[in-house]
Image (cartoon, rainbow, N blue to C red; front, side, top):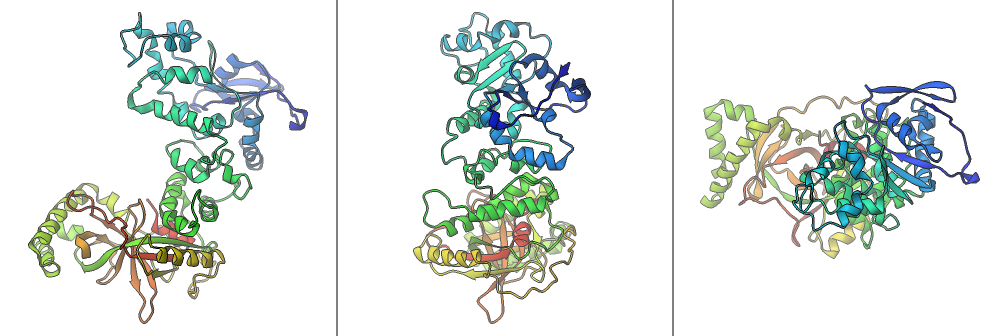
Length: 528
């Protein structure tokens, strides 16, 4: 296959198509000639180029030098413009496997046949003369890896005209989507396609915000972790000002910092309490971003320490007693009996003691089978290294008094002068964050709380939970001051029993406002 690549200016108003596809396995490649030079491309792209050449065509694997970091960064920043300006975006789902002889015959008339048929309830619906002829859609269309790819969200969402292509013809998206919506595919695969259609249909609305896109398409896959963020910038209306841009030379932690700072600057829709909204959601959002970027987003220096964020959480209770490690509990009859006896030292009601025993039994079972997963929630946070300052606010979670106090603190944080704590370590100091947390210990808390905490947890420490997360902060009051310091993160057993529900904010729930440097937020909300 011989191809010519040309450079054109957008000002010349070129007519071209943009290809939307998945690269496929790197182990299967074909050789093509581009401007006389031999270039290796993966099989799926080769199939697309062989079948789809009509107008000049733009596709990323050839038109971008993927090995040139500077070129890749500059081209990715143009990606939304490229797909918006295309005459048409072509979705290439790949060729169906050999043996689908009826595919070619049925593909071109598929939308008309489906929409003109009687009501379709399943792939095997008997209303068809030959219902088996549609079975290929279950595997080829709904199970196609294409729908899980990060970049297609933007490519589909920005397209002016959109078509789905095979080697046997092209069907316009506006014809295809109503037809496939008549199916009832297994495993809710249609929901992925439906979500993409929804974003495209409302691409000019305010729902296309970075925060929402990252949440809605958190399942999407890519090889480059930065693309879990950069792949949505062109579709997100709140990123049009360039306040966050693709840069593949940045370490993953710096990408994390960029996204968190962007999140804190944004004003949510229909709210006059921007500071309260951001502070209530930042821990959950931090956890989401870390999951997207992966383990390698761990910071290695203190260069970003001075950037302060504000988080608010609900005070769930106080630690009453710190007990043994799970290993000690499981290994010694004496330790086990002493732990069980301690319930009666802190609770006098037989009903409460019974609930603690039930919770303890359920938690033991979880720890026995999932100790590694549970202890991932337990962190030791050294206040000499990870800076924080907590304030217990007046008024309940949603009271005007509490919200006004949060807004005032948020304003101070935005000025960068909210953390009046002496810097105890040189900013350039490298800190080993890979060291494992020392053995976690069981604890009993007020409000029938039970959980695992770091060994430095002590009686009187506060337990603070964050909206829609499993993150639990342990805070300790400074002597002679009304300031609390983060000293660790814990895992709570609440929610394992129907009788013992998780702590949820109410009108009377106490609120803790925690100012911390961005590395502390990263440490506290780490899902790994």
